[in-house]
Amino acid sequence: MFHLGHKNPLALKSIMARTGMSDRAVKDAVRGLRRRHNVPVGSARGKRNLPVGYFICVTLEDRDIAAHPFVEQFVDESHTIRAIYGDDRRFRELLGQLALPFTQPRA
Image (cartoon, rainbow, N blue to C red):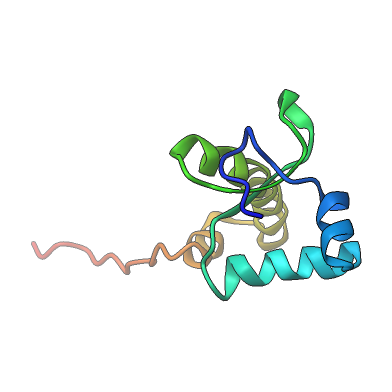
C-alpha cells in the first residue's frame, strides 16, 4: 500500500475505499503519521500539474513538493502575525531570534 514518491500518489478516495475510513479519518491518520511517528507522508493537491494523492517522500524533490503548501501557508500566516504585533522585534523573538540588549561601549 506504500506509494513511493510524488509521481506515484494514492488518491484519498482510493484510501477510503480500501480502508473503509472517512475522508476526515484518513486525513487525521496522515496527520498522526507525520506528527507522532515522523513518517514523511506527502500530498499533492493537483496544483503545478502533479498527480493528486498521498505518497511517501523518498527524495528531496518529494519533500520539497510536499512541504511547498505548508511553507506558503507559514509565510502567509507570518505576515498576519507580524501585522498584529506591529513591529519586527516580537516577531523575531517568536522565530527564536533573541533580542540582545546593547550597551554603549566604555569610553
